[in-house]
Image (cartoon, rainbow, N blue to C red):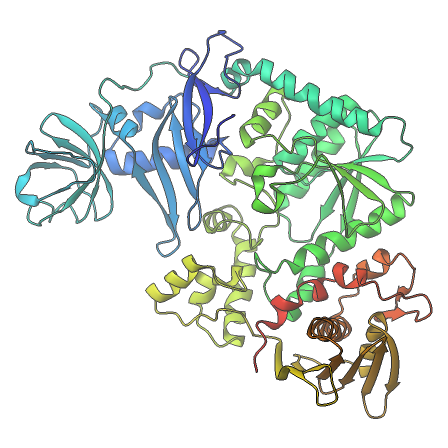
Length: 631
């Protein structure tokens, strides 16, 4: 993979071995591969058992055959879409794409021109024959009066094979098969099938994929092992590997196993893992005679979900509560002097990881240095490496899961959530029941849960459009639990400087003494328990915070006043919504925080650096919790 021009990235394909190449030349037959252009980001992966079945069933459903797919590895390339969206690569050509429709809760097939060519002669359904026409065919719409034959049944928006005279095209039916001959512009031509292209008779499997990429695998393994060895060197810190049960952490383990012989495996049991994942991790560690350390979150998710509401793609409170909290405790107890942890983070996984370096520090877990030896690998690199090493992998991947994590993760695809219902109905039913009850508490319909709107605090355009289509009044920002109203906003004071006033409304109220305690991280506090008022002064700024949620900030400039007001809101939230995860105490370099029933701040030690705000799940996501402030 080396080109990223015009929204495409370049791979290669060996037509002799009929498999994807991860470098230009095939290791098996030594032939330079044919160039294969795929849509960005180019994180191509092989379709495993269930994935292969899904692709085959789509072609069989629409065209009555899946003959050209048999005995071959199908590759899937993730592309932009509302949910699941994959280009389908067979015989080194993009034969189609499949997309998951949120409204229909089902996958749909788009037929591409090479797919139409490979279906020639074997398709038994979805065929339209039309009279020869003049002019360009690509993008043209065919009138019903020009259609001479229809073979098989299809519905509006289904993919179809279109013969215009002797020219074969990929197309889309705009109406059902019973109407297609009586309606104008009833068929859209997508593209012309390339002449001479036929399905390859050469079968291929996982072993062929590995053999054809052996030299590439040796090279990336050598680099990964060398990078790990160079960093660890003579350092005295113990070494560990983060082992989530996913494919990427398995590849990271494989590299570390070659580079170093003394390490611990760390697994975070979030309490909302698939049963298959927990069993797999334990089985793998036992069979490979590895030391497995488990950081357990227990019932933390279910204890906190009532307070925070469902996690969302833009509000992942669950990661801090269920992952960072437990792993911070584990590292503090097992590695008091710190640890170097090998992780399977890849740049192509997400935008947030696109610029990760080989060496990273975890801002939320003290004394942990993270190495990312597979940061530049594609998913295909990972799978080729796993098959090459003959590692057992999590069986959930065979069930067509692209990623393996918490079973109710907001970042999982709706298509995967549908698969969860198939493989573990009890887990699916528990979360689905919670979501349906939750929709009632925020005053919306069950469709808000059914169509996955809960996955966002701020709905993206695609979800806004879906809400309009199904006539659902969905809030732009969930305000089901917290609210902040600025009563005056930022304004000039008569005595000079600026002031900002607001009222914070919370779903529950704890002892105001906790708020006064939390405010010590902002500045010096004077507190009246009787009247529930706390005054904070720090240099040239002043805060007044009241038990009813009123907050008043004054300062010399608009920037300082706004920042001070924000820190006061965060302190209030931390006090009232504290989960006692303890991350703030572990982040404090001054050792100024200890956890009792809630955080206790040593005013003499605290330097108001704000690191506890950065670490706290409540403070870090305060803008998501409270929504947009209103006047």
